[in-house]
Length: 173
Image (cartoon, rainbow, N blue to C red; front, side):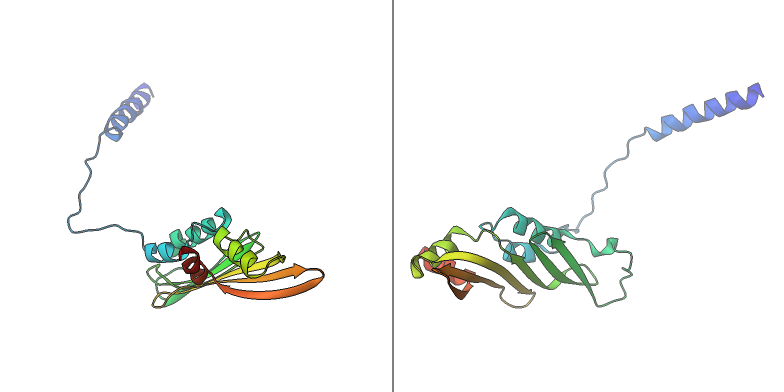
């Protein structure tokens, strides 16, 4: 019995010694690692939007479809739904994890200063009552960023539809 216990102790000490051995890093030549949805992130994420919008967009950009239980690489596309209290994103990924298209909808967010200033200058005395921010992304087309806004003044309501990118261009001129 003593020999067995001593043998086990010696074996565990030797095993621990080998476990501490450092491994050298392996360098892969000709391999470039880059985020798969960087184009999506750079195109869609607007630094003027509230952090909640930006965070959900970044979450969709960095999502790894290979971690899904249903992922097997056999399907052409995978649709993933991201949701938070003020908005949602439906993103379609190809079998390699690249975003092919997405539809984003955010409700009652704080619109960027340029958009609010544009609204107040073009509609003096009106106040923003409700808003919806919609982004449509397609891998091979321009991104559509639209703000649908309901204004109120003296019991009256008015609905506007603004192309956010156009408003930014007007603000720069």
